[in-house]
Length: 328
Picture 1 (cartoon, rainbow, N blue to C red):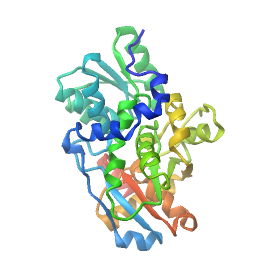
Picture 2 (picture 1 turned 90 degrees about the vertical axis):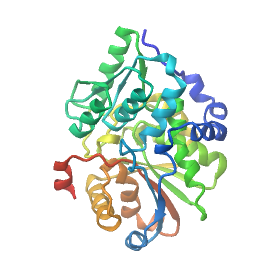
Picture 3 (picture 1 turned 135 degrees about the vertical axis):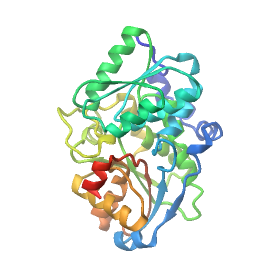
């Protein structure tokens, strides 16, 4: 059998595994290069959106995404479990590769044949082996699981491992230092680690803050599963937001989301593109589709959010030159 690091029981033990103490411990352990990222309001953006929104910039690090928080913490806790195998749309693989290189550990990353070539190139630059299988992320994930089982390697699944979510939860610890209270968090949902880590911190420390997940209309499986209280899959995904293009949800992540998420909304690719252009024009930053989707959610429903102070992480900026030219 493939070795896995955590179990469903550990995921369901919320008070132990997703506590403020666990997230604080991660904050004191994670490579500082991923921590204390800029967070600020942009007056020009607030005026366009008709609300106040705190932007958390998670793109200014060697992998250009928030994934380094969770992967660095996870690998630290599981050094004895190597060799590692994972599947990734690109950013999680970069985070794992960066951490594994740091600790001189072998890693094989499975990705779809259609994956972002820039992200794949950087995974290889960090020293990991890349294998391309299937036409989407979930097909690559199935191949990665089978390979880990055949080799008796440790399969690492984003969304399944508590330590990855706890590492991501350090974003919430930093957001909570904002001098003004946050009414609503708009959090992208891929495999669920980001929203579970952030939601766990806020539900414990600031329970009045609403945690709202955001998915792409063309990849609604996580929203459908959470809303209907059962695992629901889709045959395909159709979205430019490759980082959150989930067709088959992680059951353990959904279990935790029962306690960390207040609502989930869907946003179209058109709105995502408009928010990317808005951030580029007003903030001068490049954000990939999955990273801009929180701003898109605020943009498309001003009536719901106009009277609240919002916050969202801009959680990735890995765009190819072709994508930049096409989208921005």
